[in-house]
Length: 250
Ligand code: SAH
Image (tube, rainbow, N blue to C red):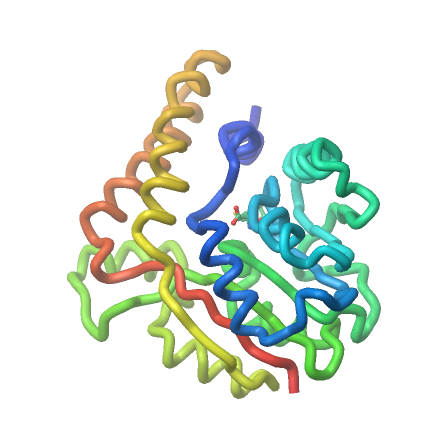
């Protein structure tokens, strides 16, 4: 297996592939001021196995959802979850890259994306996706964000290498304004969303993951990188989190 295949295999049985919670998904939705009783067209980009899509579907009872991911394994799991709940007639899954979307102009009332826009970069992503929103439609994106004006060099260096577009919220909100959106709200994800909902379940998957693959340097590397990510968060969680950004297309 290649490195990316191992990473997908490690994450495909997980509830979520990034920090978040049902409460925070619904809090972000409330910031859009869209009417949950309307028949909205919703896209969820970089959906993974789709916990956040299900949270949205539980309140948007008439809406239709189009979920996008690069990896079919995640989309299959998402479809199974929807089928178990009898929701599949409101779902379309699309295997595509978030920077090459097969959508029409002004197709959606709401574009959702939790913990995935970094794959094309926040600024490029919000600018590219804008045309797929109806005027007045909303965007809700969670994105890694500095939560203080200054931070230790060790964590600054790590993120500058990993994702140079990490910024404070004021910078990201400015990018939304420059990109043709009216910001509607911003909040920071809770520590429980990182630790209880993402990292603890991840730690519980390490041993089964190790057992189902032959040992190799690549396998060690994948495990080490995930462990390092957890350690960094535990040590430096005062300085970064995911910010949830909600904005209306102008
Ligand atoms: N929104 C989910 C998953 C976040 S992890 C959650 O919060 O749990 C990031 C997701 O982006 C993964 O599912 C990954 O497969 C997907 N992804 C990575 N690169 C992508 C790309 N270029 N286009 C679409 N999806 C991509």
